[in-house]
Image (cartoon, rainbow, N blue to C red; front, side):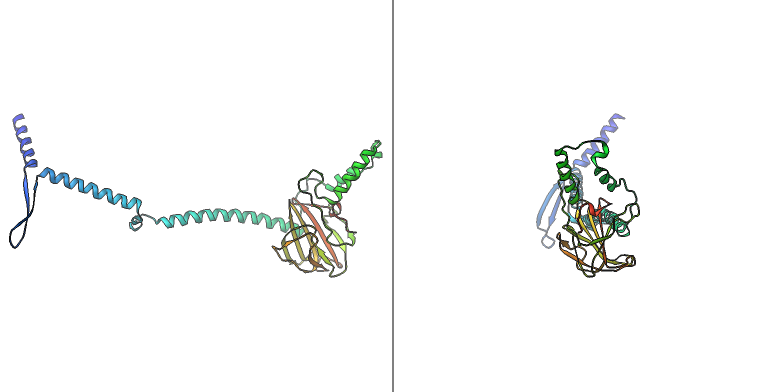
Length: 290
């Protein structure tokens, strides 16, 4: 058996290593042009190497060149890039829409004079601070009186109550006149009504951006200005509007003309509101309308 196996092995090796001559002849003259000495093993190795080289080159072409886009199942690189960009844009737009929706809801509340929750009554705090010292059984010193007068003056004209605040707003009276209806938090009248003649110029109380300038059924022509730091001023019942949404205005600049427009009015006047961080504040604490 061993002899037969060795004999068979030698036979196979001989077949693989037997040399053959490949000759290329001229068909007309039978002149030898080219000849190769080959055996079965050389042919097998050559075919295997050729197959590996072709497979490797094809893989490289598919993986690293745009040719892969022509093969079914592969998506275009440009399409992938556009899809990623669109995904980012979609996320950004959703965020912007969410912020805009919250912003418009806030403007809607300001227009309707709605306050969901008032955490404190600022007027009560100010009134408490103005209680006479004698009522508490204390005798004020000269220095204390000077300090109180200084604080009262700052509180009258500055939006923020401390002199150390980084943002110190000095508000300009939108009009001068007699207040016919005062700020009333309990009565949900979050404004002061100033009686003026028709077509009296209405002025911006501080620098800012017009975020609303439209007609409303109940309050006529309305202008809302955002001043930054959470401060918004509202001007209602105007006869006409001079500024448009998006306009930048300066302190004391004319933005509208006083009138008697809208259903909720009984005569020419300015309905003026101040909102700080979403809560109404009493304008007379910061502005002298006389």
